[in-house]
Length: 288
Length: 279
Image 1 (cartoon, rainbow over the protein chains, first blue to last red):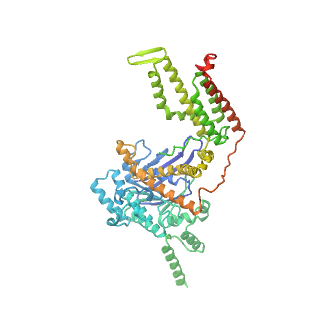
Image 2: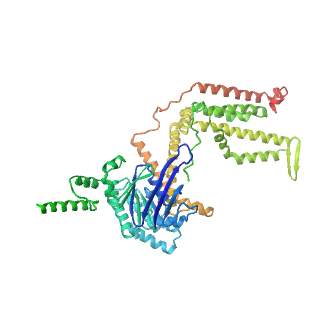
Image 3: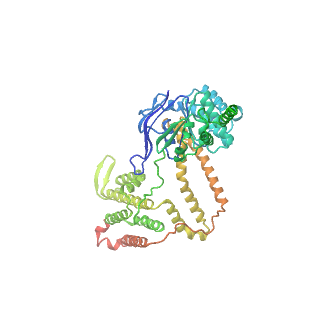
């Protein structure tokens, strides 16, 4: 059970004068339980690629299998697929529509045919997962909530469908630092504790560096790099040529490395880097 | 879903008609629309065909795009032609079956009505095919200026029109996005009965409405924070000027429609002399 793309290509406005190659023979395997970030410039094909995973864009050429469902086939069981792959768009709070939070969260499960008795439980659980108190918010109008709360409700609406793969398109855009932290923590919990595969599109390299275990760099519809964060951002030069920013922690680690520090262990979060520095000092002190 | 819908029907190219002043185009269009009702004979429809061919050539819009505008009136066209054929009972009886009968006058009037409707729409569509919505708005504002004297808020009306136009593409995009998002949540817009389908649009319409209000408020704030006030005398970035093309087109149209109206007014004296002109 995994996502397998083989030579996946997509052209917008095929045949017209202004056709645009959005994806160019993308081949990639994403295993269950991975946390993958997709980065790249606007127009690099990130969004086109992730929309393929949910059959919002149908396969034009190449192959794509998601958890055993062949998306290049003529008929795809969309209900099943959309239950498997949850998609959280940019600014998901703009999709809220129902009278109450409860109804809005129940929209997805209802559509994919979850039995009524189960829906109530799922809604409760999903709201808990995103850190909202069911009793407090369930009967409120979603439009009464704050921006961050709205986004969490929207996320709950996707989680209630019990997806095995969660695709997030810039989940933290436009949130305050606290809201960002909360969303990322939630995504991490979902990935680590619930074993959900996470595919996150993001422009924030710091956030990508600290959270993702694997990064795909897209440029002009092609995968340029497919590496773990530390190895990717060790290529400072190449990253800057792609007009991507190097995360602060990676810059720090790169400088340390230039000064002779061995950086083999995982140095992604400030805590990890600090610990490495302290260990290095202790070692040197010990040597003397 | 909505990605392929282009707003309006402007056909971008460079031509005689594209470079004309939008105000002149609107006025000549009105002349065309009114004038066509003074045509009563096949002979004059023949002249009009020549004029229309010249107009289309001057616009460099492919005939296919012009004919596309006829799709909207297809039903009306069919209905009027059928009604005219079967309900007109003057002239010679040509064919009869059960309660249906066809007379020669019925055929003629049906054919004339068909020509009138088709030419009406084809001529009128040339205006929107060769003028951008923005230019149209400016032209309408300019033409309505005299109404300011009787305190009609012309500038504000034009502003409303151009704001509406400028919001259409972003609303289209927004709609597209919302549809995708709700589809990702398993929403289905293509199956089920009428009521079920209508209900399926609620999850699209409400977010769309909410975001329209949000956009409107943002725009209003942005405008008032820059002290925008309607009634101040404003200059425009693109000044409309009357050029030689406008003069030529106006002359041609005046001569043609002058001729048509003269023929119409003098039908009493002229029709015995040149009966073919009045057939």
